[in-house]
Length: 398
Image (cartoon, rainbow, N blue to C red):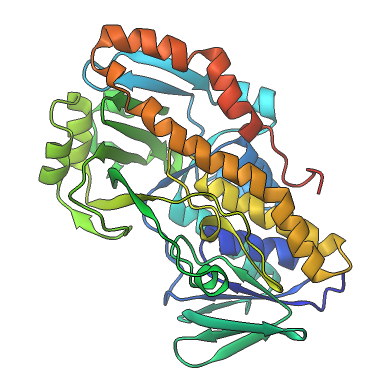
């Protein structure tokens, strides 16, 4: 396809930036429009499994990000009350041996910055800030994106990368109807030096219990610890990544949980809370000259650690589809067909993991041990994760 194709991307988060970088590498004329006045991400962690590391390598961002990240030695489950440990899987050399790439834990702002640096290295003017998309229209000749300030951008293709509450998705497919999951999540980061030495390990922990779970893992070469706690409650239904909570409220949510969890809650500089909303997988992403990537088309509960990774994979695959096709509209359909089954399986798998993390059998250590052997031994883990981690966005058949 001619690299004179003009491509508009609404949204400059992880999905939009990965897609923009992928398309710029193919020689396309790309403009990324972000509503925020600066490129920022919530100061929190994200897990990049081997399939994500592989996709980042295809974008030329892997080595830059690896230098800023952590490669945990292992990932393990812990009992919510006693702290009993059950190994999940090794993440270091064994992951590289099996999948070819490591499992990284990454500070979200570092991930966005690594992608943005790649974009600006190719085109310093590709990113425009402070432009919130409010409407779109398209015809046989092109597509126009209209912004809140009245300005417009015109192109041949529009990509909606504007997140879970995507305006582009609404314009194409109407308002969605998310359902409250019955869960609230807390998120914070902790300076590693503020934690007791025994809590500074390069290990990813998932504390599982009846009605809730907590995840913690190191970031930024071990300088900070990420904390994410999810609890079942129905009195907070605000889907926001920026609503501040208090350590006292968070501690009440995890009353009775292991002392290590309360140490981390107490040491967090701030704690954000948001309600988790459930959405069914979409059956279509593409309409004419417009399509979607990332959370705009496959928002997920965060229980497979694949949300950011799938957005990056989308960008790599979409770039390949547009570069390899003679007709850009056909390329968008090819992209959708290549990605929709995988991402739908991911969304449903994350939903299934809710009950696995919060099962009533986890109440006592004795019943939890039987449950963990049944649900989280080697074969069930292999069935649930190998198809995710072995995926190669750069070379998968289209």
